[in-house]
Image (cartoon, rainbow, N blue to C red; front, side):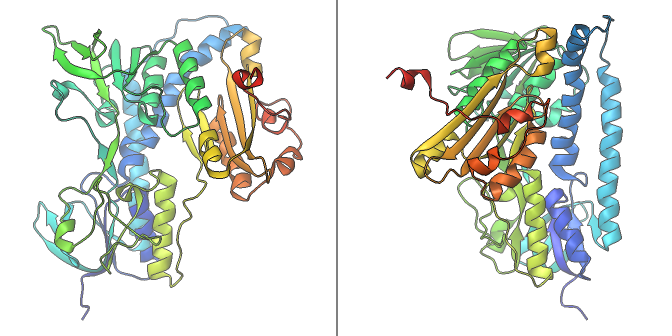
Length: 461
């Protein structure tokens, strides 16, 4: 008789947990996955996937504008928010069902309950109060939005979770935050015709990205009608008798909106999981501390994905989950390499970025060569638009190794996936330039930048 009910118990059926559970179960291991919400996790249910559908929907306003410049006759277009939500929910349900089928076909059991550790080998399920035991446990509960609990009126604000289910589109919205979620939703609501204000307490949006990218995107989204307010924050949110909200700011201004959305960060979802009962170590942010193989300080417990607060991206969680399964159930010790991971921001225009920023490169290697191009894409020039695209390469001056590539403009996320392969392999600028351009494309600019970029202030020194 088996000592435990399962060989592996996974808490959390998001991208990382599902991948780990499937691969482990396919080795013949007895696997169960507990999920308190819906199978698919943040990415599929309330994150990347529905957000990308919203980006698609909101981009049509710009497409219609461009169409007139290409000779299409103007016609009145309207957007049906409830119809879009229905279609979005149908697709999300379909994708969640695929995750369920994949788990079941692999032989894993799905437990639609909340799981809490009682000790290193025992979980308690809620609401049934059933207890199950497992030889090994994987924590894959992801993260959740955070809001400032001490802000007067914060109960009136929504987060990205609620933004996917608004009963109707507001006329005016204030989005608080400067990260990719805030910037993406600003583009979404603006594109859908909502008077959009993006407020961030810092000096510039998208902390952690290259400074040229940050300033360029700010200018571009302002061209599209998004009001960007920097260097300030709320003192309080006041609800009026008519149901609108007065946003009182530290700069003394008051902005009236119909919705206030906070996108000021996410935290690892570890509260209430009973990790302390099992002796699992957490860091100061509440993230599970793991080694290179995603193992915690407890010998039979691992963790993958956003709950570890390493690189909080869905593809990273998937790769970490696969590496865990290979290591623990495939007798093939595997660790995911977190270095040089590409990322995309589905802002409008979007961003693709991989490798070091200019500032990071100067700190790490000293002297760098910068190649930079700012131009109007071919499509935009035809209809007289003012949108500008940015491309930037950061190169080690001594070795000529390409350390970073940053693109802002149409199809930037698609470009960066391919650029990431070359940079991950250690491509030099000479090898990069030896690639023949594909014409006519915006991407050809990446391999035709020959002149080093020198800022005006340095050129005049």
